[in-house]
Image 1 (cartoon, helix red, strand yellow):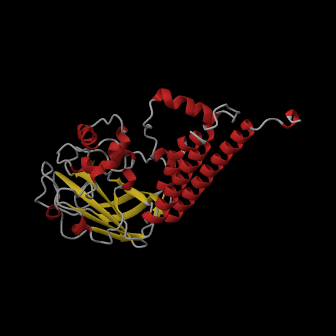
Image 2: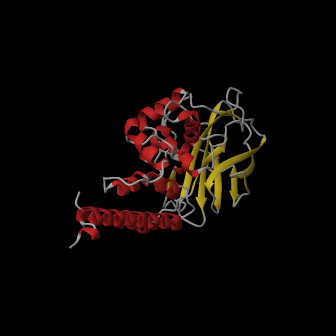
Image 3: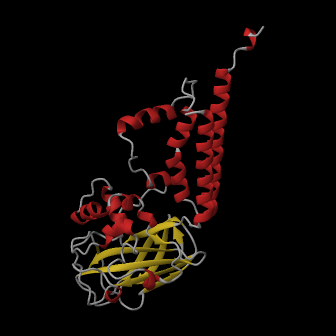
Length: 320
């Protein structure tokens, strides 16, 4: 690649990065129900590449692993309280987002949490990027059949827990409440977190049972708060191709005959910048990340051009 083409390509990449951050308007908040555990986070904790339960295996077979690695991002950016308007029947657990379509599978074998009807219970919502807002928890009614698609009519008309700006402890929102009386068998709790500082809303489905056959409430491990852990899924490159990049990143920088190496190293580091942006607290984080990436790209081009200029010019001592 010529120096001119290299510079042009880098300028385009930097411009697109900045334009995406400025124009997307996304607020990069995240979270999911931790107790009782949501479907999407539960499948992630089983192991995204090789989940253990039949339901999670089926979800991956239908929608792939991306939804599990992004367990904290099941959201609608411009919901603004219009949940029933935006989310169609049969797609409540995915919030109508195609990437999460595996969460909508109607099955009676989703891993479930055991609850006691009529008992006090402290619900917990894992927040990887906290924000002000209101949580509303709905539970299914007598029309619910886990082997059929979940509809809005399958939920009780009013939330049984409503908490605004709850306490945040150990990275989890604490939502004290009381489980409705008279619940039996397998049911589902549908959580909606509507931010008050943004139109963005988050959703999750937690399968629960009232016959003691599920897992103990609160026994699910809490995912790491390390942003890089949320997006640690394998890269698209093969392990053989990825190994040299890892070695190069760990070793001190050394001169090389390939003048495009700095740019390649910058492009290989792009997923890291993406991780930081997705686990930030707002649009400003994405903008700062984009600006940083643009500067790094520009610096790489300068280094490449400088190296090529030095290589093409004869040494000063060789002049007459």
